[in-house]
Image (cartoon, rainbow, N blue to C red):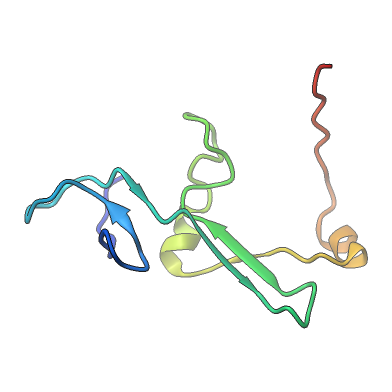
Length: 97
């Protein structure tokens, strides 16, 4: 997917590309946005520019890209009661000893 994105080497929307006045592909960029209201443990908002997973060909490789481009976020509460209410599934990862 190719699209225009604002930013440069010394901006809030930092991105790296070859020095040129012509369009070029970005080689890296700002990868996360995070907003938290420290007075409210449930007011935490995040978005990852690419997605939840960094593995090539993973369905989650770019699952948050449209949120990023739209300036939207995912709410991540911290209180256990709200976590249990909003997140009904979990994943357990077994690590070999």
